Length: 492
Image (cartoon, rainbow, N blue to C red; front, top):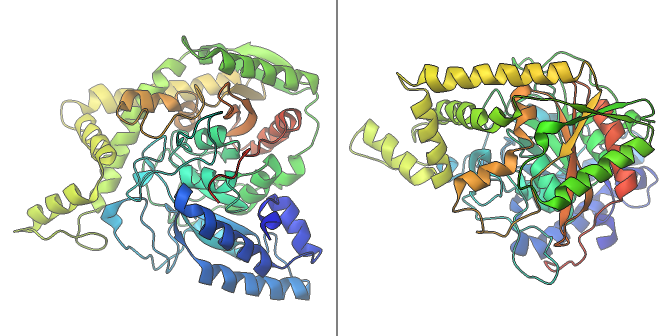
């Protein structure tokens, strides 16, 4: 049965349609893998075996009748930022306590409507605030990867570390994730998985616990480029409940996978060469350029002059929006409540007990930059910088079709190695935040191994709503680099 967990999403879909195994057998294989491995990895905060088997039974009935939907019987994990009807949703925070939504997020509803099966809820940084999955109230997630000759526990990236670890460790076929400043692409890069942040507005945000509303976007983490394309096709939709979702047809992304990139113009932004960056990151970048050239693309240097301001601007905009969004957690209507002498005391006691240190830090920063006397100097200035970043991308895409960059400034670090230094932690997003600030799509594809024997990824950034080109170019990198399986299953 463990062989079933090794399948890609596309292979599992084919196997179910050919009746080589049942959806129930597939679900049981993954539930057994979760039972055996999750204690060591901490990827799932809640497994849902009864629901998974009930959904699988319905899928088997539809498969038997020849009435299969696009994702019929395929077992996936859901980041615990997505509200799931009747299933506890915490966003990795004590303040939500045992909150059980009475509604389903639009993205997960789309997946269930397409026939997918839910294995459980996946760990994440508290309110998606983190780059290492160390801020969750459920504790850190361990990557299934290890450095050569070392047993040091490595981070799986963040905030979608549960999603990346579960996919890499074969505890699900694919997973939902979210990306506010790199939280899909960065964990995908350092776990040898594929992650795409679609264009802002491509997927509905309704029913996803908000961090920074103008930056958050849903997307998948999967084993392959094809699997990511299949997932996004069925996660994306217009949604009248989300005024920021865009009414545009969702293409058949899978059809783009494998198409030729002959004649594609690839831009290499000179500002992404960072002083002090490891040589292996530059070498990987040059290898990616060579692969795309060999496949028929032309490569051109481009300039994104405001890139250096993206990270500081992001760490004004995102905390400002989070301080506004998190004001709803007051201990009155749902979640944790710590009674006080009066209403204000209840608010203060609940938030002090419910929010972790990183969330409190960002709320304080956000409240400060929005306060009287500082709003113009910080928040308005950051939004002006954001407009300039978008203009940089718009001008670059007049000359090229797609941009190629590294995804991360280095490989995975050990749990606890960076958590005491917030600035160092924030720098993990240096190559990814620009796409969020501009609202454009970006994909990370595994491209090689570091000198430590752990994965590294390359990032492709595209024009708004042109995810299909990212899948097309991403497949070229995957074909050239190959896939990167974890060498030793130490956790099971």
